[in-house]
Image 1 (cartoon, rainbow over the protein chains, first blue to last red):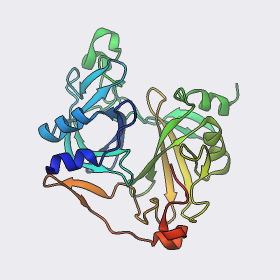
Image 2 (tube, rainbow over the protein chains, first blue to last red; image 1 turned 180 degrees about the vertical axis):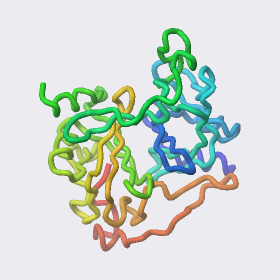
Image 3 (tube, helix red, strand yellow; image 1 turned 45 degrees about the vertical axis):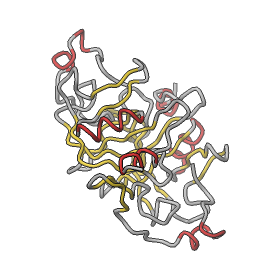
Image 4 (cartoon, each protein chain N blue to C red; image 1 turned 120 degrees about the horizontal axis):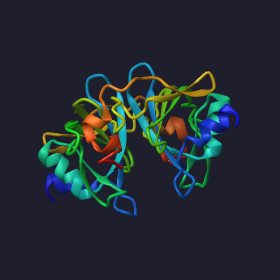
Length: 138
Length: 138
């Protein structure tokens, strides 16, 4: 077995062939987003160094940043203890979130209420056009 | 609607009633693990300040650390842009992973091969007994 095959075989994809992947900015530790990958998109990501997810809503590979330019360069791929979750250490260009926020996790429960804890760093209209509605994603 | 109901209603549980939750150590930024929660375990976690997941394999709430003592105190709960993933900022006692590792993500692809990048910080046998096999978990 090749080393690549051994890596892919260590991942336990769900019955739909998917595995959740957490993207974390490699130097700041910020958790940016969570999305899904297939065996093929894990392989492409490792081969190209550019993170490629699988869009469940569109049913096809989703090369992060292909529309918006907000790409993710892979620094390291990690696999959890039982192989059913990935952690991607990435270098994120600009905004990871389709809302223009740096991280998708910009809402927090504080003092018992859900509040926004960050401001967008980019204009979704400029990134995606079409009224700013997401043109790529989960 | 109460503020708690508004928080819970912002979460999009999957058809099985589950949402993935990423646990991150609040001060170091280390991603510790990913597990699943239900509406009821989110509510319990917010009420008690102790993280309670839902074990898919055992089909019941899983109070993190109930067997091992390796509890997670919740510092902040965040919800992503489309409400289908949670980020838990926690204070983790000891090892998050049933293997005795601090983080479940202790395997990484380096130089094209999957390698262990950390050593256990606890003895699973001491945490769980029964030959160290997991007595709690996903």
